[in-house]
Length: 317
Ligand SMILES: Nc1nc2c(ncn2[C@@H]2O[C@H](COP(=O)(O)OP(=O)(O)OP(=O)(O)O)[C@@H](O)[C@H]2O)c(=O)[nH]1
Ligand SMILES: [Mg+2]
Image (cartoon, rainbow, N blue to C red; front, side):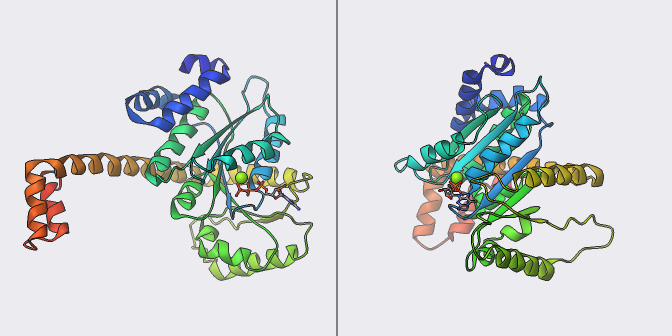
């Protein structure tokens, strides 16, 4: 199936991404196959408040990127993380429709992933999806997440280039700051820039950047540029794409790219460690030993923390 996806079969690629989402042995086997062939694509994370225009921007960016692609490459991969539950799955469809209006179908592969309340699953599924798209030569890969929870911010923050989208209006920039988005932003976009208050939003961001900027000597510093876009009609999208390219070059020239990739690998490996250790712990909690320890906690002769250490004692040496 992997070879068929490499040969350009979109259905095969879709099925591979389903395997990634499901996890388990097939997902792991796929990672073994894909990992040696990955590592080439530029990962762009796009994040911001609900309704800021992320999907519209993503569609436009993907169109700009796929127009610039070489003939022998498949184009742009898009992973849209949908924070809604599977029950209210309508939002996934909504994303599709908004993106479909602007997307170049030939040169773009769009995949929605639902969080389904399992942040751990998502933290593993996203790097897995990037790896597969990368291995079958999609470049760039754009990840859209709603920047509301820590996991979403973490995911956006593991991209090579993170774009934070805000809109004009009271406090949007301040909210982005509170959510920890300012620190992870490589590029800011004030979208819906045709609306009143757009230049105020830009000024707020400039101020916050000034306050937060502490360039350290000897450490490469990138000051996040602030771009104005009207995604609905495409204004400013070429400039945004251009800025993503500049950031990519900067990452390569300063060695920051290597650093980021390493932290992405680390993020994924540690996510896996959590998962594996958690599984071991849960299995042991069901054993006689685990039940006995839980009894001690109930009798208050042992704290839950001490019981957990005891349960994993041999692993913690
Ligand atoms: N006026 C105006 N509306 C815009 C602009 N960009 C997007 N919109 C509209 O804003 C709404 C939300 O756009 P989306 O692209 O779905 O925003 P999103 O951030 O992906 O939304 P979620 O994924 O639901 O968080 C849609 O109705 C868009 O048409 C813009 O530049 N100006
Ligand atoms: Mg969206």
